[in-house]
Length: 272
Ligand code: C2E
Ligand code: MG
Ligand code: MG
Ligand code: MG
Image 1 (cartoon, rainbow, N blue to C red):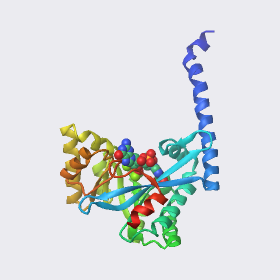
Image 2 (tube, helix red, strand yellow):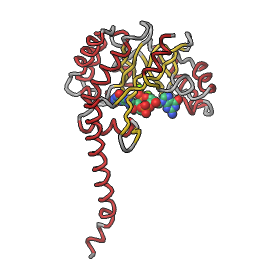
Image 3 (cartoon, rainbow, N blue to C red):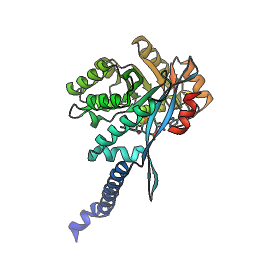
Image 4 (tube, rainbow, N blue to C red):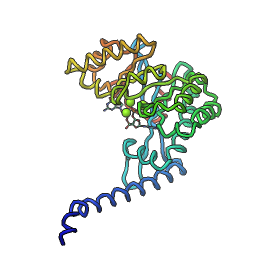
């Protein structure tokens, strides 16, 4: 029938959309259960200070192993957690866990935690952070929070108020994945971050592409002039390390310097 033909594309497409929706619902339920049962975990990746040649901090990265599917990447489950609101308890758990873990590290070692834009809705984020710090007995100066440009996308006064509240507590603030958003320079003007993390896509290409090298070098220079730390992400080999050093980055992070590892392996490193 002609109408059905005309909607052929929809008929072909609909079952796949339904299947995707079902997968997301199942993943959401399983993730909620994993959080309740304590089977989500954190991997810590070192952030190297390039002058001191040692890790001065570790980034907390969520890890989840699904009982049947195996490892599920944050890129897959974080968006689901954001859509369903599960990111609120999940994000609060990461904050509490990471602060408690970091409290046992040497005082010169910081911990970085990623915050979702969704955690800024409702204006509760500073309270959640304060409670995590207090429960762990971690000085605020040892916590760094990473936000992406999407957090600042609305130029929302409430978001800026939360960032100022966190700053006033003494927590450090980093702009993550810098360069992948829409109006990066505007965000630097809107809020004085302590750190800019240059996205790994620039770092990876800068070894071979002069234009990307120019971007990395310029962002490092811009950060220095603004009194911010420039951290290069995605340093995968010695050639990347040499490049980001030469470009003037103060810190670097990537597989070449250390992969994300479970706490037990990090604690051994940090204690050395
Ligand atoms: P991100 O915050 O930019 O974290 C860096 C990501 O790059 C991590 O991926 C890390 O494993 C990966 N990475 C580090 N070094 C290298 C390298 O040399 N090469 C390559 N190719 N990749 C490298 P991961 O753990 O899969 O996390 C992906 C993203 O998921 C994170 O990006 C962050 O946006 C988000 N995420 C992870 N944990 C959390 C969390 O607790 N809360 C929130 N809201 N987001 C999180
Ligand atoms: Mg990050
Ligand atoms: Mg990043
Ligand atoms: Mg990223």
